[in-house]
Image (cartoon, rainbow, N blue to C red; front, side, top):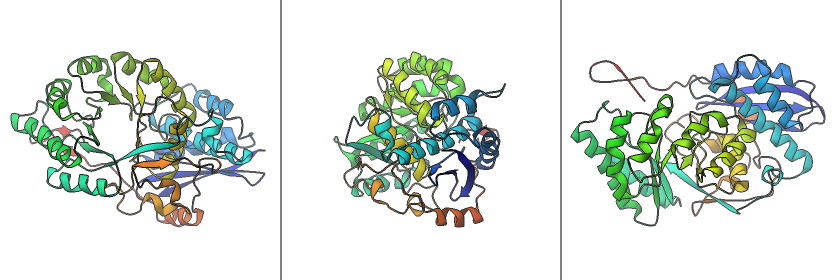
Length: 381
């Protein structure tokens, strides 16, 4: 079996899909994207295609090593995301060639269902309780919210109280038998995070996510030591070596993105590394159906898995929805907050190729917002 073509598709609301074709008619799908830099990743996939044409797609590890190392300059979000999407597609092909789901190829399932959570906002507090109630009504047992919107480098007493009151409002809706994670989104300084996180402990968040920017990872240990609240990070880390300092700092949860951190191949290794530190896996995934399908395959086969993010109904999805690009929605159903395991081959998702090609004809130019502090200086989004 040989790879004959690699195509990419720029699909709304902000995603990039890739399709790897073979001379035996088998096709694999992947989702290589950096949100806001989809065109750049598309170019990187095109460059990597030169290494893939004519190769056996089932030699996944060899192709992964070649794609990540056959250049003097390595790593970074663009290259790692391009590799990630291709890697997903290669696992998809391998699964289809053998007639088995990817989780079976990863050693077999260790669970028969995967708990998922949904996003409820938090930049603006007015609708938080209503959004939490809607997710509970949809069947979820866990949600995630932003700690705040734009916030000062050293928050005022009012800003600090606002973070606590947001979480308190959601906790009141959820009660004691559901979970809420709090995403700091890298908006807080180390000092601000150390001040605010301990105040959240009585409300028992599942974890606080990305309390500081990844470039201040050398200060993570100080943040972890400030509170008993579990600290999570990793959506902007892209390899095992990126994660090692965070794990050494004591983070409780790692959040690699299957479309950023080298795909299924590397995320499995990140999960194993985390297990050695007694840390849990909660993959980042505010993306499309292929990224979610790949994440679920890893979750089914990973002992130290905690919970899976999914983007159905997320506020980014204004021009299209995750389910718009699949032929069968059943694999993504979560009536009781869990996605059930299936024996569908490959990634377990059937992509609507006609819908993808129509969407690519429209494309998108999604960009993150640019925020400013009151004094006009740049603010973290």
